[in-house]
Image (cartoon, rainbow, N blue to C red):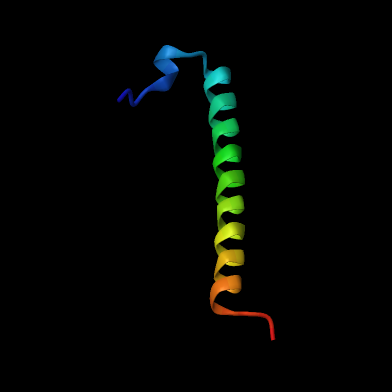
Length: 48
């Protein structure tokens, strides 16, 4: 695995890709977390 992405790509493009990837990971983590929380509530904490 290459540890220096700037050697392959221009700096601006590398930063843009990194930002997009971070936003995408954050987005998917939030969706996954919401799903797990809903699953947990439905399974273990039925509505009172």
